[in-house]
Image (cartoon, rainbow, N blue to C red; front, side, top):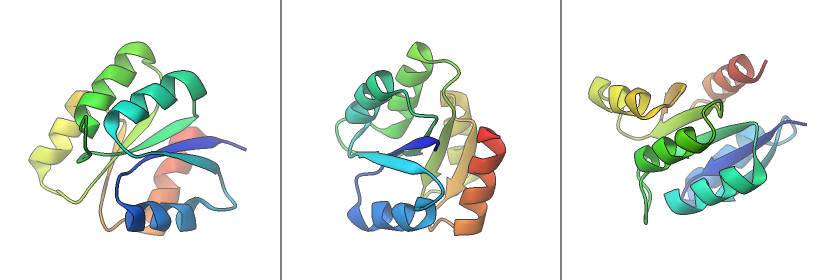
Length: 117
């Protein structure tokens, strides 16, 4: 089963992601950007769902660090900021796709499946 790192500091958003991913993928959590970098480099997940607003290190900085170390690691940005400028910042940081919160389960699964298969 494919493994997904969910980098999300908000408990309710993490619970929503577990509901969406359960039974389809294995998943584990990072609660800030630095932890996401650490877990990505040690655990080597198949994909990362990256919240962009997190403590200690934001998702953009974490994405840049992960991509520098693991250039082929797929990262999907998750953010409540749905402006085109936010999407561009995420893509410029190295994200492979972009999802706006609240996340639609069908959109999330569709994008993950497209990237992993």
